[in-house]
Length: 121
Picture 1 (cartoon, rainbow, N blue to C red):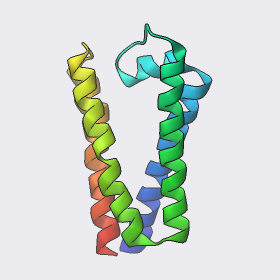
Picture 2: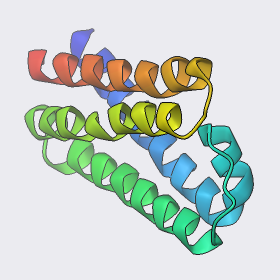
Picture 3: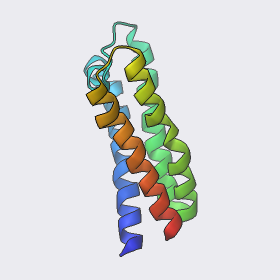
Picture 4: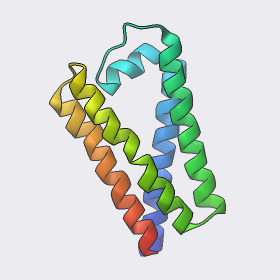
């Protein structure tokens, strides 16, 4: 049961990151508003974030599918830095604490839990 839970959570998280990346590529301004800091900048920077997130998501799926739990666990551990950084970015640029902690910090905690489950398999 632990193995199924670990892989299921990791798969859902990586699919979610890929979805966020695709959203930033398709509707960059709306995605930025959902991120917590509306964008007034060139759309190219938002598309860069989208490509980064899409790539992170696809890499995670590849590790889950082809490299196993330990590699996926290390991936999750390292990737948790992104939502932790996102928390600080939202707070630093006038976003709400609700978005910073309720979305980004909560995501970081969930990713760390996923890493722990994968290491436990």
